[in-house]
Length: 106
Ligand code: FES
Image (cartoon, rainbow, N blue to C red; front, side, top):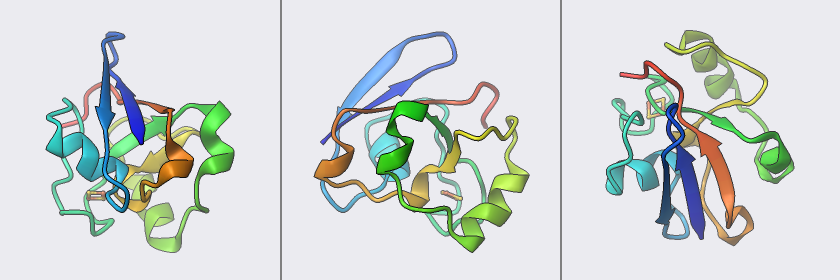
């Protein structure tokens, strides 16, 4: 599946992700700026915060309890589009999804 990460300045990275990876890991593997994945995908760091464009929201799994807690700890402001990239598995159903990378994510 192709995932597009849009930087705060508008530059877009379209990456081809493997099935079974996550939005966080696909970004890190492909060197996308602003997605760090410091905790390795344990829902414990919030450095994989992304804003999923609303038109794709219906394709995502529900927010789990750990994700919900960690979304309260994001560096950039949480919005209704906020998700943790490490909690979203990639499969064919996500092909073409577009997510925005928060500004000031370290
Ligand atoms: Fe740490 Fe997602 S990688 S919360």
